[in-house]
Amino acid sequence: MNQAQPLWSPQLIQRYDLTGPRYTSYPTAVEFQALGQGETLLDIAAASSDPTKPLSLYVHIPFCAHVCYYCACNKVITRNRAKAAPYLERLYQEIAYYAKRFGQGRVVEQLHWGGGTPTFLSHEEIRQLMAVIKQHFQLREDDQGDYGIEIDPREASVETLQLLREIGFNRISLGIQDIDPQVQEAVNRVQPIELVKELLDEARHLGFRSINFDLIYGLPKQSLSGFTNTLETILTLSPDRLSVFNYAHLPDRFRPQRHIQAADLPDPATKLAILEHCITRLNQAGYQYIGMDHFAKPEDELAIAQRQGKLHRNFQGYTTHGNCELLAFGASAIAQIGDTYLQNQHDVGAWMREVAEQGYALKRGLALSQDDKIRRAAINQLICHFALDYASFNRCWGVDFEQYFSRELAALQSRAEDGLLLLQQGGIEILPQGRLLIRNICMEFDRYRQQGAAGTFSRII
Ligand SMILES: C[S@@+](CC[C@H](N)C(=O)[O-])C[C@H]1O[C@@H](n2cnc3c(N)ncnc32)[C@H](O)[C@@H]1O
Ligand code: SF4
Image (cartoon, rainbow, N blue to C red; front, side, top):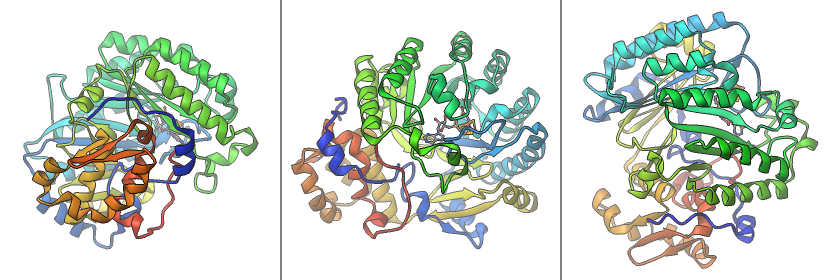
């Protein structure tokens, strides 16, 4: 594995700028099947679950007090804080159901609250939700678990951070997006940088580790010079991790995006220039490119795990907890248990009704075949480490990689000739100019994509 930063190649980006999955799972969520009988998939999950593995828990809180026009998350916009209470009641029921079935005697190595906006909840509700989780699951007491929460700076105070730290969180991710007032107004998310600074200072004082910032490029009113300013200010704040997401304008799919005027969007050349600048500047500032849209300081756990060949990818993005089984609570949340993926009802009402009736509320899912698992391993290895060693893969999976993937390797030949990767005797190495196009390379190993399965994915770049 090598840590060379990605190399910017406009010609290759032009040639391979195709749509592609983000591979937070393989097979991707579009392959999940509608469930007639959730019980059957839960039985397969239970039969294939490995109770010696630790757990990762994801909790989805869908509420937001204000709408951000770009948003593609599963959320419910409401000013009515009372909506949280009945949702939490069902969440407690779902947590109890899964804890009984899958939680016995297993340590929770990773916990993540996402949304929507988890801090939409009152301090009392936050405290109670954590108490219920601790009542049903075994959380680590030594502050060595990886317990994180997504924070909208407008929905959190210094006191909120103190509470979160007190009840056991040790990581936070702050939604920043852009600090340019013009852009903030265009997306209906006015958020003064002073707010962010105040929270950041307190978070550091309280000992939160791995503070992450989310940024988005491609938003209305953004320009290269504007985003350059944003990045310079962000660098003075020195977050441990940075996610720089690409905004895809899909107003037919995401209603709030209809408020965005297409004429205000930066053109593709500007977007590319912004991305190129981000990559160069973050590299210069000492951040390690983790992959896709993620950067981390070299001393951050993600960067260390990547250098040690121990990085994984799951529904929470890049993670150091690849050995965990993932239980997921709340509307639209996705679990990964044993050989299955299980996705909850997307609609909050449907999710609440079904949990009330039966303790769980699945909408769709998938039981993985052996071929799915082998392909997932190959994709994960390439997307996390930009290299794959045939001998270790073969030892792990009992296959001959070159034989098993002979069609795929032949198809990758042209990309090798274009300089995206090296197809060597012992394995595959993704070259620096191929790293930004890793999704395109991974798609070759995706049996469903090769069969021409339908599905819309965000632009690679
Ligand atoms: C659930 S939100 C984070 C927590 C909180 N709701 C907030 O906004 O601060 C997750 C992240 O998804 C990203 N995001 C949402 N919609 C997006 C879109 N259409 N394109 C790219 N990134 C998007 C944003 O960066 C956002 O911070
Ligand atoms: S970006 Fe965050 S705060 Fe804004 S609407 Fe989406 S989930 Fe809610």
